[in-house]
Figure 1 (cartoon, rainbow, N blue to C red):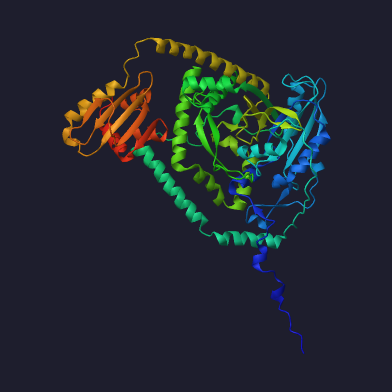
Figure 2: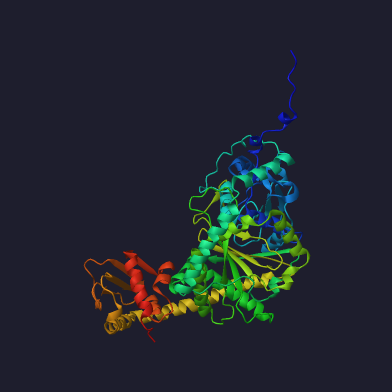
Length: 616
């Protein structure tokens, strides 16, 4: 019997085989950090952790090795698709060797903060090897004269490429190293590692083609979502009179925004979390507002002393996490950004903080309307090869010098664990962050809170900020100055509140004004618009009921038995509404107004208030 001839096509693997389990795609946002890397801009984030006591290097290495299975990215490397037709993929590294990722050094004598800062700056200047998993730990002994820790303590400098992890996801790395108990636990043996084979180039190309085939309408869908979100945001700017946030490339030029050098400069300051919280409570703003105010004060002083302070306020890019609550820690970047004016043109620190608070609210309001996720998803539709080449051309031809900066500085605030952590019984004392700088953005400030302390860490380069130590000193002095002024203002407020004259709310004038308007414009007030209760909070709490069920409407002090809707608002915010500086819808979006019940009735009241002449 003749043997059946085998078809040449049968030797080609089926397409289903190209759905390789050893291929994990990176997102457009991840690729941005990868393509931005140049010889002078290594794109890693990381931290310097100071550990109390003489933790041994071999113990540290065993702990990391035993827990590597909890961080899969620590044993994966990148592979590039031929012709750059797709973003790179993560694959298991068949040659993984932990000794290539954990280094052991000692500080030069006398082992103080100056030496630790210099060593950290030198290590941060070196890029990670992209032919291996993109991380490293440097175990630093000899912290003999660093005042925050006992003599003989150690530090651990971690680096991980930004393509693999964002700031919020970086907290997951702490789970790899630390525990909440100070007990010395037995270190288990590492779990076996069985890397999957690296796919060949044909497999990579077909996998990319299949990825596009699975979602060919990704670009049209994204455009549709973006248009919807833009229309929503546009409605807010027109109908609700919400000011647009700062636009990119409108920031003033400063020495911080030129072409950077390859040598990193790094430094950090430590603040008390409780003291910063006390300031935000007095000023009735957020913790992040106070920290932005502290950074703004230091930036203003630093540039002013060099006669380089621009007349326009500096603009900060503030990363915003788009992670859902309870999202798993796969480590990819899930962030968007806001641009916030830092009011560095305002001399008075308290007035500067109040301006920053308003700017932040405006940025958050617009971001909530447009959607941080929509902004982040825009990176997904940038052509792969174009993005790669564009980033390199931008750096090669020094294009950052040919336009206004998109922003002047990045300030990122990452909340960490509020309780102490330990490694093999040794307490983690401080954690200080670091992040990359690029051409046009020569300073990034990483703020991290942990166990009652806030660290403010600055990363720059030798060209942009050769005297970073001076700027770091100004961070501390800015914090002290702002604290003394706010505490003095807080004492004055307490004295005013102690006077027995706080019987009348300032917003009483609004209700008298509204009552008069309703009577004079009865023909414009339609009946059956509901019974509205307004609860005014503040130094003189009061209650008002507005009955719009009958024309011309009734405004009286007191509580309604069965209101259709209840509005709770601070007296000061209500006066801003009365003076036309804020409207009901925006106050609600910003969280300044609480609505319980029929929100349609509340919005009807808002439309009436919009027609009432403003109070002087």
